[in-house]
Every structure is written in C-alpha cells, then in structure tokens.
View: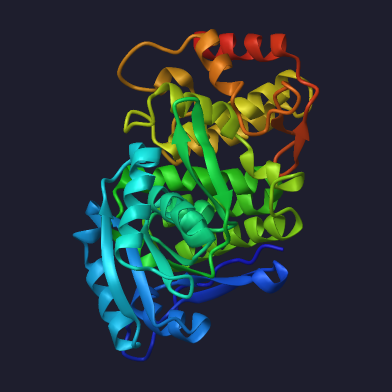
Length: 392
C-alpha cells in the first residue's frame, strides 16, 4: 500500500523538523534496517555503535564525496560515538572504478589497515562505491560486516539495498560479484541537496522502474509529484525513497539470490546494461539514463508483443521524458549508434541468461511486470533494429 507524503512539519519556530522512516529487510538472522530520512549521516556513529556494537571501522569513498561536508560529518559522528576510524580509502569517481584492478586496491588497503571480521567497512558514496566496497567486504577474510551510507538518489533507492555487490568486466555489467547483505543502511536525503541535477535524474529512473514494475498507484503519485522530487522537497524525497526501498525489500525478502521474483527488479536493465557497456561505462551514458532507455524499450517491446497497450508504453515514456530522462537510443550523445550485432553480443552476457536463452522482464501493463523466457532471438533483433532506426 502506498502512503501519501504529508507536508514537511514545522516547529513553532518555523524550522523544518526531522523526517524519518525505517524499512526492515526481513532475512531472518541477517535482517537489517534501512533508515530513510534527513540528517542521518550525523547519527551514523551512534546507530552503528548501537546496532552493531562496532568499535572500529574503515571508510571507503570517492574523491568527490571525500571533499564534501559528508566526510567530516561522518568522521565526527563516529568519533563522538566511540567508533575508531582505522582509515579512509579514497577511490576515483565513476563507473570505471568498478573493475578488478580497483577491487584489488581496496582489498589490499583494507588489509593494510588491519581490518578484522568484527570491524565494519563503511561505504560512503553512490552506487559505484557501494558495489565496490560491498564486494571487497564480502571477500575480505571471507566476509566482513559493512554499512551502506548512500549519497546518490540511485544508490538510496536501489543499489544500497538487497546485498548485490560486484564489479564490471569487459564482457558486461556486474558480472563478477557476490550476494553480501549490509548490516545497516542509512539513506540521508539531505545528502542529495548537493547532487548534480543529472545524477538526480539518473537516480529517478530507478524510482520510475519500481513503480512501473509493481505499483501503478505509486506511478500516479510520481506523475503528480515529479517536480517536488526534482526540487528536492524533503517530504517528497523521503516518501519516494522509502516507497522504492519498501518495494525492493519485499522482493528481496522473497528471493534474495534472484532465482525468481527478484529478476523483476531488472526491468529495463537487459537493454540498459547492454547500452551502458557499449558506451564504455562512461559519463556518456549514466547507469540511470541507460535504465530509462531500457525501461522505455521494454514497454515498447511488451506492447509490440501484445502484452500491454501502446498507451501503457506511452505513459511510461512520457513520465521518463517529464523527468528529463532519455527514452531513445538516438538520444545518447557523442558518436554513432550501436549496431544490432554489438547489442546482441553484449546482451548474451546478461546475468539472467539460462541455457543460452535470454530472459526478459516485460509488462502486462503499468505495475504488472513479469519474467519472460519465451522470446526468440529474431524478435529481439527486430526490436533492436527498430529502436536503432527510431521506428519503434
């Protein structure tokens, strides 16, 4: 059930009060809380100490976040709570950092810091840092606890929740990794105030994806509140992040290792990951932008196969466009379009391939995604050819 966000409450003095919600990821003995709200980074030390009993930690971040006030706020919070920071590992920003070479740097640096199994690795940053730090924590000493403090919208609504960690390879996106659940997630929406607009829009693509795959009423709310989210109004942001986290948490609790329902969270990703890999995991096409195009293609493909109406596909495309997101391959800047052969080759390495057959997430309508394994290669080739030509 969705809940309408109430306006941000005000104290008698007129200052905006704290907004906070907690979502439980129910995984038995490995269950954990995702806290969504304002000013959470300043409470990180207290929450980590109280929840995990941790006394020592190592922080992994990127150079952009390291130079921001979030780093000092986190450090002060940890020390005030009696949690000793063993050191901070600062990585280059960008998707290219999710690779074997940088993973080795992180793991060896954690070993240099003498991080032990009872210590905690803190990922402070966007999805790249969360995925890389989580994978490093998963393989360090065969498993060290870690905490996600996501500072991008994309990471807050998607990658920080559910325990998927990993890196990219030349063959495709996230093809090396491990399921390693965080012990705690702190999604501080105040961190989004300094996020570049392009990054905010890219994160919003994952919010639309959640609504498109399983909650038509949520999409209706987004259509009415997209401007408030883009203006970073606190109540709208907290609601959008929390609702997306709720949806993902429910699916992860049912299917932690992506054997069934969790595949639904890949709506738009089969096409999107191929485009992202083709673009070289670069700033030419951000992950969220690739997901936006992929989601629009998935709905157009669904409509072409008779699963949903053209109106459903148009509705999704219009909302993506209203959020300032691309919906067509032709909108990818700088350079020629991919070929059918290039995208088919990249899609053949998709994680959901079974028995050599690609698995697609399609939709019977808005909020009604399903897993399809009956798509023939020739159908996909015709779809991609039409998308490249702009005839879809």
